[in-house]
Image (cartoon, rainbow, N blue to C red; front, side, top):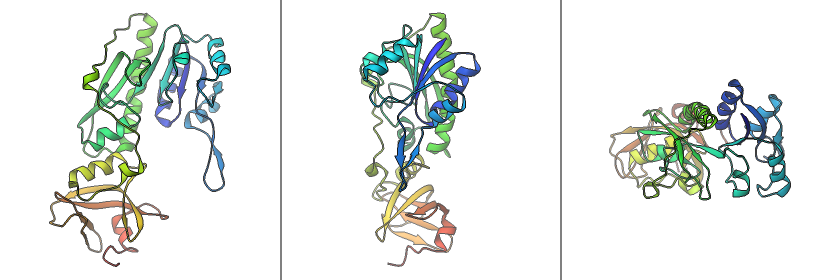
Amino acid sequence: MKIVFMGTPDFAIPSIKVLLENKHEIVTIVTTPDKERGRGQKVTFTPVKEFAIENNIPLLQPVSMKDEEFIEKLKSLGAELFIIVAFRILPKEVYTVPPKGSFNLHGSLLPKYRGAAPIQWALINGDKETGVTTFFLQDKVDTGNIIISEKLPIDDEDNFGTLHDKMSQLGASVVLRTVQLIEKGDVPVQKQTDSSATPAPKITKETARINWNRSALEIHNLIRGLSPYPAAYFTHNNKIIKVYKSQLSDKKLKPGEIFQTKTDAIVGTAEGSLCLLEVQLEGRKRLSIEEFLRGYSFTQA
């Protein structure tokens, strides 16, 4: 089948690979424009662009998805299907181009966690199960008819990084199965129940800020949901300290109170306490708490 694939991050790459391995023709890949990053304003590519270049797949990087030249180019490619994995919101003028429609791979069991950060919010909320869903695009974001939903357990040790990778691989298999159903022309779809929908908004700096007046379990789950990126954080002596790994503790401390030894740092919360296991002081590298405490003290003002 002739396919246009749209995606940006690493999450999308296993889906591209599985399509190529199964002899589907990706006529072009659409990704976001290059960006200038860092002090030197070095131009960086998206992971999907890097993959396209390495595999000699034609590439489009429109600034606007409503650009008329871009839409005309899409029409000229003769693709039967558009597949979207971790990309922008598409206007109707784009997703209605292919005769077999356009479908999206989403990192949750829709209608739960509609929005930009479904993997993170499943962890932040302490869920024990998540999954991936493919659905046909329609006007409202993440609301289209479901094609396939596949469940995935969340392990106690999972964080955003590990769960992201598991879901990326699971998503690739679901994308392939979805394409096979569409090829056969027999696609059973299920309408979403809007009343069951929950939001998964973009992660902001305020979302990532640790509030020690919440329970230790809530904070622990926040840390899991944002590790390794962008990382939950708190401030101490006006410096930002990111926390990548933690463990629940039964030590009795007041919210925000820090108990420190040579090898441990435990912080009180509204309910229980939290051992900090991996942290990073702003401007420094990520360290185990034992390494960190060799050069930093929470007890000194």
